[in-house]
Length: 376
Image 1 (cartoon, rainbow, N blue to C red):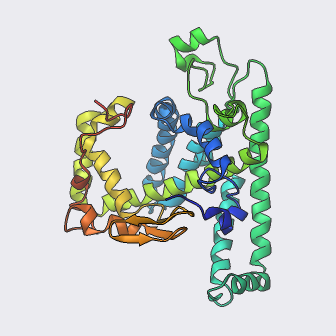
Image 2: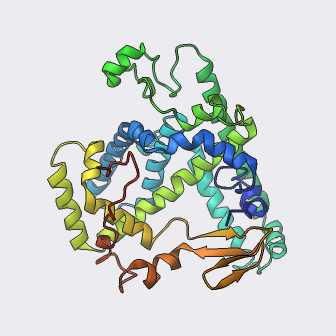
Image 3: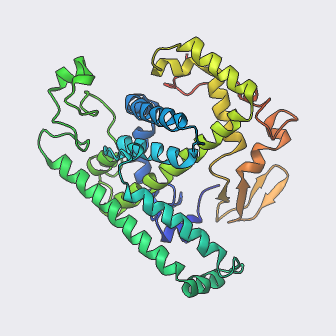
Protein backbone atom coordinates (compact mmCIF):
# COMPACT_ATOMS: atom_id res chain seq x y z
CA UNK A 1 0.00 0.00 0.00
CA UNK A 2 1.49 3.31 -1.09
CA UNK A 3 0.86 7.03 -1.21
CA UNK A 4 -0.24 7.59 -4.83
CA UNK A 5 -2.86 10.34 -5.02
CA UNK A 6 -1.01 13.51 -3.98
CA UNK A 7 0.01 14.18 -7.57
CA UNK A 8 -3.66 14.89 -8.32
CA UNK A 9 -4.37 17.08 -5.28
CA UNK A 10 -4.91 20.82 -5.07
CA UNK A 11 -2.13 21.02 -2.46
CA UNK A 12 0.32 19.76 -5.06
CA UNK A 13 -0.73 22.52 -7.45
CA UNK A 14 -0.36 25.18 -4.78
CA UNK A 15 2.22 25.90 -2.09
CA UNK A 16 3.27 22.28 -1.58
CA UNK A 17 4.62 21.56 -5.04
CA UNK A 18 6.77 18.44 -5.22
CA UNK A 19 7.84 18.47 -1.59
CA UNK A 20 8.78 15.42 0.44
CA UNK A 21 5.27 15.15 1.90
CA UNK A 22 3.41 16.02 -1.30
CA UNK A 23 5.12 13.62 -3.70
CA UNK A 24 3.95 10.04 -4.05
CA UNK A 25 5.79 6.81 -3.36
CA UNK A 26 5.81 5.95 -7.07
CA UNK A 27 7.62 9.19 -8.06
CA UNK A 28 11.44 8.96 -8.31
CA UNK A 29 11.94 12.46 -6.85
CA UNK A 30 10.32 11.31 -3.59
CA UNK A 31 12.97 8.68 -2.89
CA UNK A 32 15.78 10.92 -4.10
CA UNK A 33 14.78 13.72 -1.73
CA UNK A 34 14.27 11.24 1.12
CA UNK A 35 17.79 9.85 0.70
CA UNK A 36 19.29 13.34 0.74
CA UNK A 37 17.26 14.67 3.66
CA UNK A 38 17.06 11.59 5.89
CA UNK A 39 20.15 12.45 8.00
CA UNK A 40 18.57 15.79 8.95
CA UNK A 41 15.72 13.87 10.61
CA UNK A 42 17.98 11.42 12.44
CA UNK A 43 18.28 11.31 16.23
CA UNK A 44 21.87 12.48 15.85
CA UNK A 45 20.58 15.49 13.93
CA UNK A 46 18.15 16.32 16.72
CA UNK A 47 20.92 16.01 19.28
CA UNK A 48 23.15 18.39 17.34
CA UNK A 49 20.33 20.90 16.97
CA UNK A 50 19.30 20.60 20.63
CA UNK A 51 21.18 23.69 21.84
CA UNK A 52 19.59 25.89 19.18
CA UNK A 53 16.16 24.56 20.10
CA UNK A 54 16.89 25.21 23.78
CA UNK A 55 18.00 28.77 23.06
CA UNK A 56 14.76 29.48 21.22
CA UNK A 57 12.80 27.86 24.06
CA UNK A 58 14.45 30.29 26.48
CA UNK A 59 13.15 33.16 24.35
CA UNK A 60 9.67 31.62 24.46
CA UNK A 61 9.90 31.27 28.23
CA UNK A 62 10.74 34.96 28.53
CA UNK A 63 7.72 35.80 26.38
CA UNK A 64 5.51 33.76 28.72
CA UNK A 65 6.92 35.60 31.74
CA UNK A 66 6.50 39.05 30.23
CA UNK A 67 3.00 38.49 28.85
CA UNK A 68 1.88 36.67 32.00
CA UNK A 69 3.10 39.54 34.18
CA UNK A 70 0.67 41.84 32.38
CA UNK A 71 -2.18 39.83 33.88
CA UNK A 72 -3.93 39.21 30.58
CA UNK A 73 -4.60 35.87 28.92
CA UNK A 74 -1.83 34.66 26.61
CA UNK A 75 -2.94 33.67 23.11
CA UNK A 76 -0.83 30.54 22.81
CA UNK A 77 -1.05 29.44 19.19
CA UNK A 78 0.26 32.63 17.50
CA UNK A 79 3.13 32.70 19.98
CA UNK A 80 3.93 29.02 19.49
CA UNK A 81 3.67 29.44 15.73
CA UNK A 82 6.48 31.99 15.88
CA UNK A 83 8.44 29.73 18.23
CA UNK A 84 8.35 26.73 15.88
CA UNK A 85 8.95 28.95 12.84
CA UNK A 86 12.13 30.36 14.43
CA UNK A 87 13.33 26.83 15.18
CA UNK A 88 12.70 25.49 11.66
CA UNK A 89 14.42 28.60 10.33
CA UNK A 90 17.56 27.87 12.34
CA UNK A 91 17.89 24.11 12.03
CA UNK A 92 16.37 23.86 8.58
CA UNK A 93 17.84 26.84 6.80
CA UNK A 94 20.46 28.39 9.08
CA UNK A 95 18.41 31.58 9.25
CA UNK A 96 17.52 33.52 12.39
CA UNK A 97 14.08 35.03 11.81
CA UNK A 98 13.73 36.18 15.47
CA UNK A 99 9.97 36.45 15.03
CA UNK A 100 9.46 35.60 18.72
CA UNK A 101 11.15 38.81 19.79
CA UNK A 102 8.84 40.92 17.67
CA UNK A 103 10.90 41.24 14.52
CA UNK A 104 8.48 41.64 11.57
CA UNK A 105 8.13 38.39 9.63
CA UNK A 106 6.41 38.83 6.28
CA UNK A 107 6.42 35.06 5.64
CA UNK A 108 4.30 34.34 8.72
CA UNK A 109 2.03 37.30 7.96
CA UNK A 110 1.43 36.02 4.44
CA UNK A 111 0.90 32.46 5.65
CA UNK A 112 -1.78 33.70 8.04
CA UNK A 113 -3.36 35.69 5.22
CA UNK A 114 -3.25 32.61 2.99
CA UNK A 115 -4.92 30.46 5.67
CA UNK A 116 -7.73 32.98 6.12
CA UNK A 117 -8.19 33.33 2.35
CA UNK A 118 -8.31 29.54 1.93
CA UNK A 119 -11.00 29.30 4.61
CA UNK A 120 -13.09 31.95 2.91
CA UNK A 121 -12.56 30.16 -0.41
CA UNK A 122 -13.86 26.92 1.12
CA UNK A 123 -16.89 28.68 2.58
CA UNK A 124 -17.71 30.37 -0.71
CA UNK A 125 -20.54 32.83 -1.20
CA UNK A 126 -22.69 33.32 1.86
CA UNK A 127 -20.85 30.54 3.65
CA UNK A 128 -21.74 27.90 1.08
CA UNK A 129 -19.84 26.97 -2.08
CA UNK A 130 -21.33 23.61 -2.96
CA UNK A 131 -19.75 20.20 -2.86
CA UNK A 132 -17.90 20.34 -6.18
CA UNK A 133 -14.65 21.94 -7.26
CA UNK A 134 -16.43 23.83 -10.05
CA UNK A 135 -18.81 25.47 -7.57
CA UNK A 136 -15.93 26.50 -5.34
CA UNK A 137 -13.95 27.85 -8.30
CA UNK A 138 -16.91 29.96 -9.41
CA UNK A 139 -17.40 31.24 -5.86
CA UNK A 140 -13.71 32.09 -5.69
CA UNK A 141 -13.89 34.07 -8.93
CA UNK A 142 -17.00 35.96 -7.87
CA UNK A 143 -15.66 36.91 -4.44
CA UNK A 144 -12.11 37.59 -5.62
CA UNK A 145 -10.67 35.09 -3.14
CA UNK A 146 -9.17 32.98 -5.91
CA UNK A 147 -7.11 35.92 -7.16
CA UNK A 148 -6.14 36.80 -3.57
CA UNK A 149 -4.99 33.25 -2.90
CA UNK A 150 -2.89 33.12 -6.07
CA UNK A 151 -1.29 36.46 -5.24
CA UNK A 152 -0.30 35.30 -1.75
CA UNK A 153 1.08 32.02 -3.09
CA UNK A 154 3.26 33.94 -5.57
CA UNK A 155 4.54 36.18 -2.77
CA UNK A 156 5.36 33.23 -0.52
CA UNK A 157 7.14 31.43 -3.38
CA UNK A 158 9.22 34.56 -4.01
CA UNK A 159 10.23 34.66 -0.33
CA UNK A 160 11.19 30.98 -0.31
CA UNK A 161 13.31 31.47 -3.43
CA UNK A 162 15.01 34.42 -1.71
CA UNK A 163 15.84 32.23 1.32
CA UNK A 164 17.43 29.59 -0.93
CA UNK A 165 19.32 32.22 -2.96
CA UNK A 166 20.63 33.74 0.26
CA UNK A 167 21.78 30.31 1.44
CA UNK A 168 23.60 29.72 -1.87
CA UNK A 169 25.38 33.03 -1.46
CA UNK A 170 26.47 32.20 2.09
CA UNK A 171 27.74 28.77 1.03
CA UNK A 172 29.72 30.30 -1.83
CA UNK A 173 31.62 32.62 0.52
CA UNK A 174 34.96 31.16 1.54
CA UNK A 175 35.42 30.67 5.26
CA UNK A 176 31.92 31.90 5.98
CA UNK A 177 29.20 30.33 8.02
CA UNK A 178 26.05 28.88 6.44
CA UNK A 179 24.10 30.33 9.37
CA UNK A 180 22.87 33.80 8.37
CA UNK A 181 24.34 36.62 10.41
CA UNK A 182 27.01 34.49 12.15
CA UNK A 183 30.69 35.35 12.18
CA UNK A 184 33.28 33.28 10.22
CA UNK A 185 33.95 29.87 11.74
CA UNK A 186 37.27 29.07 13.45
CA UNK A 187 39.51 26.14 12.68
CA UNK A 188 37.83 22.74 13.29
CA UNK A 189 40.12 21.96 16.21
CA UNK A 190 38.95 25.04 18.11
CA UNK A 191 35.34 24.20 17.41
CA UNK A 192 35.87 20.69 18.68
CA UNK A 193 37.32 21.92 21.96
CA UNK A 194 34.70 24.57 22.59
CA UNK A 195 31.67 24.61 20.27
CA UNK A 196 30.37 27.71 22.05
CA UNK A 197 33.48 29.59 20.90
CA UNK A 198 32.86 28.75 17.28
CA UNK A 199 32.71 32.36 16.17
CA UNK A 200 28.93 32.42 16.43
CA UNK A 201 28.49 29.63 13.89
CA UNK A 202 26.30 26.79 15.22
CA UNK A 203 27.42 24.55 12.34
CA UNK A 204 31.16 24.97 12.95
CA UNK A 205 31.60 21.90 15.12
CA UNK A 206 33.38 19.16 13.23
CA UNK A 207 31.10 16.39 12.03
CA UNK A 208 27.87 18.23 12.75
CA UNK A 209 24.80 17.28 10.71
CA UNK A 210 24.11 19.90 8.05
CA UNK A 211 20.88 21.86 8.05
CA UNK A 212 18.34 20.84 5.43
CA UNK A 213 19.02 23.68 3.00
CA UNK A 214 22.78 23.12 3.04
CA UNK A 215 22.27 19.41 2.59
CA UNK A 216 19.92 19.89 -0.38
CA UNK A 217 22.33 22.30 -2.07
CA UNK A 218 25.55 20.38 -1.49
CA UNK A 219 24.83 16.68 -0.92
CA UNK A 220 24.28 14.45 -3.98
CA UNK A 221 21.87 11.55 -3.88
CA UNK A 222 23.96 8.56 -2.73
CA UNK A 223 22.33 6.36 -5.37
CA UNK A 224 22.25 8.58 -8.46
CA UNK A 225 25.09 10.96 -7.61
CA UNK A 226 22.88 13.90 -8.61
CA UNK A 227 21.96 17.02 -6.65
CA UNK A 228 18.31 17.84 -6.16
CA UNK A 229 16.95 20.11 -8.93
CA UNK A 230 16.69 23.78 -7.99
CA UNK A 231 12.92 23.87 -8.41
CA UNK A 232 12.55 20.85 -6.14
CA UNK A 233 14.72 22.50 -3.47
CA UNK A 234 12.30 25.42 -3.49
CA UNK A 235 9.36 23.00 -3.14
CA UNK A 236 11.07 21.22 -0.22
CA UNK A 237 11.86 24.54 1.48
CA UNK A 238 8.25 25.71 1.18
CA UNK A 239 7.02 22.39 2.60
CA UNK A 240 9.28 22.57 5.64
CA UNK A 241 8.72 26.26 6.34
CA UNK A 242 4.94 25.81 6.22
CA UNK A 243 4.22 22.26 7.42
CA UNK A 244 7.31 22.11 9.62
CA UNK A 245 6.16 24.95 11.85
CA UNK A 246 2.37 24.87 11.65
CA UNK A 247 1.75 21.22 12.55
CA UNK A 248 4.24 21.38 15.43
CA UNK A 249 2.84 24.59 16.90
CA UNK A 250 -0.66 23.11 16.74
CA UNK A 251 0.50 19.95 18.53
CA UNK A 252 2.20 21.96 21.29
CA UNK A 253 -0.86 24.19 21.71
CA UNK A 254 -3.08 21.16 22.23
CA UNK A 255 -0.50 19.57 24.53
CA UNK A 256 -0.60 22.57 26.85
CA UNK A 257 -4.40 22.64 26.64
CA UNK A 258 -4.74 18.98 27.59
CA UNK A 259 -2.27 19.31 30.46
CA UNK A 260 -4.11 22.40 31.75
CA UNK A 261 -7.35 20.37 31.70
CA UNK A 262 -5.79 17.65 33.87
CA UNK A 263 -4.27 19.08 37.10
CA UNK A 264 -3.10 15.65 38.25
CA UNK A 265 -1.15 15.19 35.01
CA UNK A 266 0.28 18.71 35.32
CA UNK A 267 1.47 17.97 38.85
CA UNK A 268 3.17 14.72 37.78
CA UNK A 269 4.89 16.49 34.87
CA UNK A 270 6.16 19.20 37.21
CA UNK A 271 7.38 16.71 39.81
CA UNK A 272 9.23 14.66 37.21
CA UNK A 273 10.96 17.70 35.72
CA UNK A 274 12.02 18.89 39.16
CA UNK A 275 13.27 15.44 40.16
CA UNK A 276 15.31 14.98 36.98
CA UNK A 277 16.47 18.53 36.26
CA UNK A 278 15.72 20.60 39.35
CA UNK A 279 16.71 24.22 38.90
CA UNK A 280 19.44 23.38 36.42
CA UNK A 281 19.23 23.55 32.63
CA UNK A 282 17.56 20.76 30.67
CA UNK A 283 20.10 18.63 28.83
CA UNK A 284 19.79 16.12 26.01
CA UNK A 285 20.46 13.24 28.40
CA UNK A 286 17.79 14.50 30.78
CA UNK A 287 15.14 14.16 28.09
CA UNK A 288 15.52 10.40 28.07
CA UNK A 289 15.03 10.23 31.83
CA UNK A 290 11.68 12.01 31.83
CA UNK A 291 9.53 8.98 31.04
CA UNK A 292 6.19 10.38 32.15
CA UNK A 293 6.68 13.58 30.15
CA UNK A 294 7.28 11.42 27.08
CA UNK A 295 4.07 9.51 27.78
CA UNK A 296 2.15 12.79 28.07
CA UNK A 297 3.47 14.01 24.71
CA UNK A 298 2.53 10.74 23.03
CA UNK A 299 -0.92 10.72 24.60
CA UNK A 300 -1.51 14.24 23.31
CA UNK A 301 -0.57 13.11 19.80
CA UNK A 302 -3.01 10.23 20.16
CA UNK A 303 -5.83 12.54 21.16
CA UNK A 304 -5.02 15.31 18.71
CA UNK A 305 -2.78 14.27 15.86
CA UNK A 306 -1.92 17.21 13.55
CA UNK A 307 -2.49 14.84 10.61
CA UNK A 308 -6.17 13.92 10.89
CA UNK A 309 -6.04 11.32 8.13
CA UNK A 310 -3.91 9.76 5.41
CA UNK A 311 -4.66 7.90 2.18
CA UNK A 312 -3.05 4.67 1.00
CA UNK A 313 -3.64 2.88 -2.31
CA UNK A 314 -3.33 -0.85 -2.95
CA UNK A 315 -1.03 -2.12 -5.74
CA UNK A 316 -2.44 -1.13 -9.16
CA UNK A 317 -1.65 -4.48 -10.75
CA UNK A 318 -2.81 -7.06 -8.25
CA UNK A 319 -5.58 -8.07 -5.89
CA UNK A 320 -4.55 -8.25 -2.24
CA UNK A 321 -6.19 -9.28 1.01
CA UNK A 322 -6.49 -7.54 4.36
CA UNK A 323 -7.56 -10.18 6.83
CA UNK A 324 -10.84 -11.53 5.50
CA UNK A 325 -11.29 -8.69 3.00
CA UNK A 326 -10.38 -8.90 -0.69
CA UNK A 327 -9.05 -5.59 -2.02
CA UNK A 328 -9.26 -4.94 -5.78
CA UNK A 329 -6.23 -3.42 -7.59
CA UNK A 330 -5.79 0.34 -7.14
CA UNK A 331 -8.21 0.69 -4.23
CA UNK A 332 -7.64 3.77 -2.08
CA UNK A 333 -8.28 3.81 1.66
CA UNK A 334 -8.86 6.95 3.73
CA UNK A 335 -7.41 6.13 7.14
CA UNK A 336 -8.70 8.33 9.96
CA UNK A 337 -5.92 8.93 12.47
CA UNK A 338 -8.46 10.45 14.85
CA UNK A 339 -10.69 7.38 14.64
CA UNK A 340 -7.83 4.90 14.84
CA UNK A 341 -6.43 6.54 17.97
CA UNK A 342 -9.82 6.30 19.66
CA UNK A 343 -10.59 2.75 18.62
CA UNK A 344 -11.01 0.63 21.75
CA UNK A 345 -9.30 -2.33 20.08
CA UNK A 346 -6.13 -0.32 19.50
CA UNK A 347 -5.94 1.85 22.64
CA UNK A 348 -5.90 -1.11 25.06
CA UNK A 349 -8.29 0.66 27.43
CA UNK A 350 -11.97 1.48 27.72
CA UNK A 351 -11.24 5.22 28.17
CA UNK A 352 -10.42 6.71 24.78
CA UNK A 353 -11.29 10.39 24.80
CA UNK A 354 -9.70 12.05 27.81
CA UNK A 355 -6.05 12.51 28.79
CA UNK A 356 -6.67 12.18 32.52
CA UNK A 357 -6.05 8.45 32.63
CA UNK A 358 -4.30 8.36 29.31
CA UNK A 359 -0.56 9.08 29.58
CA UNK A 360 0.24 5.77 31.27
CA UNK A 361 -1.29 3.90 28.33
CA UNK A 362 1.77 4.93 26.27
CA UNK A 363 4.35 3.57 28.70
CA UNK A 364 7.45 2.21 26.92
CA UNK A 365 7.20 -1.27 25.46
CA UNK A 366 10.88 -2.01 25.96
CA UNK A 367 11.82 -1.45 22.33
CA UNK A 368 13.80 1.65 21.45
CA UNK A 369 14.97 3.36 18.30
CA UNK A 370 18.79 3.17 18.27
CA UNK A 371 20.29 6.48 19.27
CA UNK A 372 17.12 7.87 20.85
CA UNK A 373 17.39 9.73 24.16
CA UNK A 374 15.38 6.94 25.75
CA UNK A 375 17.70 4.19 24.49
CA UNK A 376 19.52 2.18 27.12
